[in-house]
Length: 321
Ligand code: FPP
Ligand code: MG
Ligand code: MG
Image (cartoon, rainbow, N blue to C red; front, side):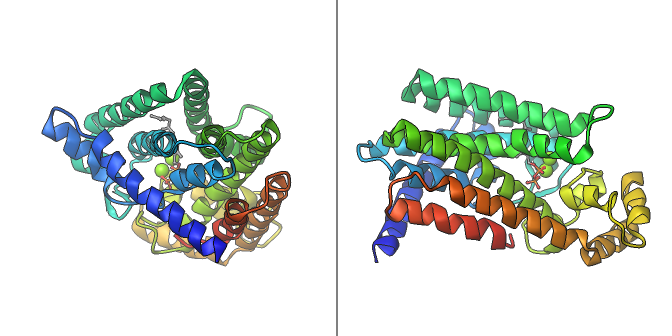
């Protein structure tokens, strides 16, 4: 019962955050407002705000306004990064609607992404310098991760190690920051904050690994399936093909690396990849990391917030969209 009541409290706070997201994205120019709210109002899992709110409840003395502000900063930063990401990935669908670049063109998508980041920056300034510092460091890591994905591994670098560094930068950094922001506004102990940082990082890795797997195995994501494959973006399953002993996997890896512009070739490669053992190997890596994340929760104070983070470790493994 305590867990259900807690889930309801989190849901109520998330509803308030929805209102604040819409308010924070109003510009003096209606076109900017429309383009900024295009992806914000398309919904989304609100994973980062939920993590901020849940982590805040591990502490005892928080101000609801600050919790909402911290969640707002994380979601606005995330959406800003999606505007830029969809330009880089040439994605045409996001959260079930036309991506901002598809609808308004690349220049507008990039500038409106900047606008959203500016809105996040304004909110973070209200929280204090230690929040600005973490936000700035996280922004740098997001860019580094995204750039590392673009440049690929250095000569002699293991492609899978490089891939994990990419995921650490482009995704785990912001999810770690969300867990830390929650802990900071909640006023948790240093020990709990350290645990939250480690947990957030690892659950962030799991989140992106599942996201990439879902891009391959699911048809109901609100994004175009196989986008990574079409764009030649490496993911753990495609990287594992290179070291797979199974007949046909090397040839499949080469076909994917060569590019899959043609719809028929893409569908064929997607079907072959779905049937390969690398899918189960990826699932095992996701489960292993989720269990590492769960272990980091040990020092946190017992209660419904900790229980919710524990359940999250299962949800990120089993999610299908
Ligand atoms: C999605 O990855 C991309 C990210 C999570 C991070 C993108 C970061 C930047 C573009 C750096 C700039 C950041 C800001 C704040 C302006 P994906 O393409 O694998 O996921 P998808 O399937 O959701 O597209
Ligand atoms: Mg993308
Ligand atoms: Mg991308």
